[in-house]
Image 1 (cartoon, rainbow, N blue to C red):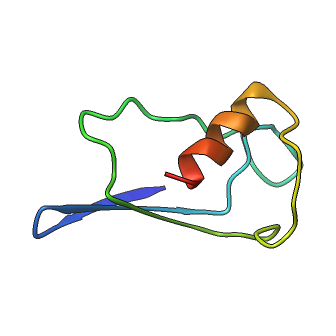
Image 2 (image 1 turned 90 degrees about the vertical axis):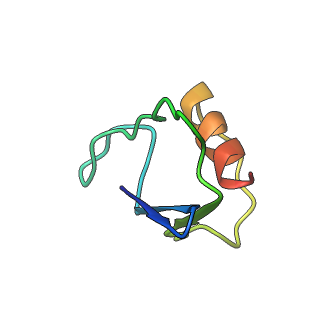
Length: 67
């Protein structure tokens, strides 16, 4: 996860993430932001598939992705 600030705009790039541990990744944690990002760019393997969040953490990540 990378947070870049360019000309006052904050851009968050997450790459691939999950809120649950799996064989590829450790669970992602939502950072405590002093100021939240203006733009979020994330990998979207399932970006065009409607899914139901499997946990509270997944719901939070899904909500952040829609901000």
